[in-house]
Image (cartoon, rainbow, N blue to C red; front, side):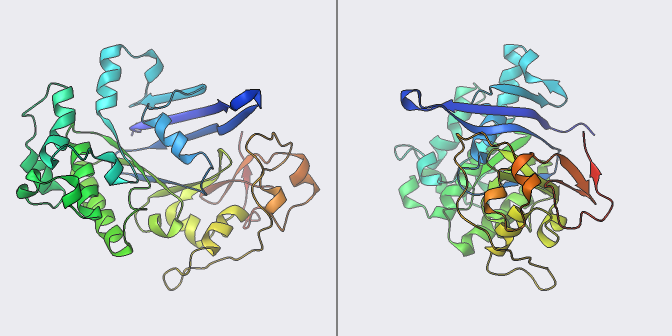
Length: 321
């Protein structure tokens, strides 16, 4: 089946003030998300995952690479076709309070994208509020009168107004209490099942995404260093950076194996172009080849990893082109 969205070798750099060089935010990232699938992109702050999410949502222009929608390159689309793709790609941001105008009621906020696209009446506010578990009476309220979880539900309702096929979820529960996080994640899972939505889920916490993601991509300094089925990534991490992220989580469910390794120092500057592996300076297992040669992608079981010495590499690892 053709994916809803495919990102192929996307790259993005930003010029630093005063001609101090260029910062590489995204460096040749490829991934795809199918209908009814949740692809979680995980990494530390500053790794480039939010920039990638905004390129997928066409909010940030890419320097190179291609975005394909239902198999068609968006670069070759007409303005009318591209507008339809934008309607079918909606983004849910981390902070619902910042995403909602304090001057608009819930009804006005949800109707706003419908007014912009001239589709008023295509879906009622009451229907959209019901879809996210809110009573129709909430429509008369202002954001300040809602809890954090209710505001995020309103943001999701507004995203659903244009009948999207893809939701880009940029840290959608990071600002919520732990008890509310589970409620919002369950809501998103129910909506996905009901409508066959594709989710590109951005997060820094593997514990948050491990129960809802189908596939996980682990991002470090602009590149995906490990990708595979969610259960495989969480229970059998191959890349030392993935192992570091898992070791930072307090606990997982019984039966899941957590690998703990010593991690040294801080990430190198994203303005620095390294000859070898970008994680080598922090990896206790790094060797000379790690510092001299960038690791190619290789398959280890059902996981693709960029590491010279991945855990489980003896399980018939295959070097990818």
